[in-house]
Image 1 (spheres, rainbow, N blue to C red):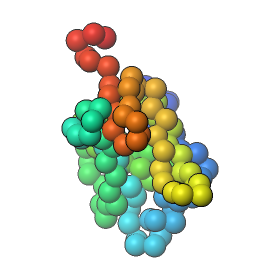
Image 2: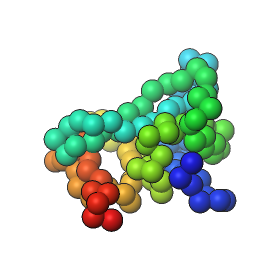
Image 3: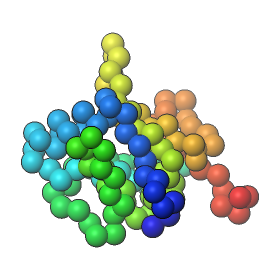
Length: 119
């Protein structure tokens, strides 16, 4: 929808692709849908959910066997994002490296995008 021909909307690191494949196989899911919603102290939050079927309006990204669907309203916010899966001593989870983010809260759970009127 908002893509550039020949370029995927998001990319996955090998660790993220491996984790998504594990999750898809465990529950026989079609993939992982990502999006954004209003919330958090910075204004927006990422959303993630397992899906059993692909919505025809989703942007589908397949890499190394992993499938990520991008909800229609999130496509312009997520274009160019790299998704990683990191494991540390205290936590494990998906990390978004999004070039469209202009600010984030201290805990990293919510983000802010540039105001469209300023672009």
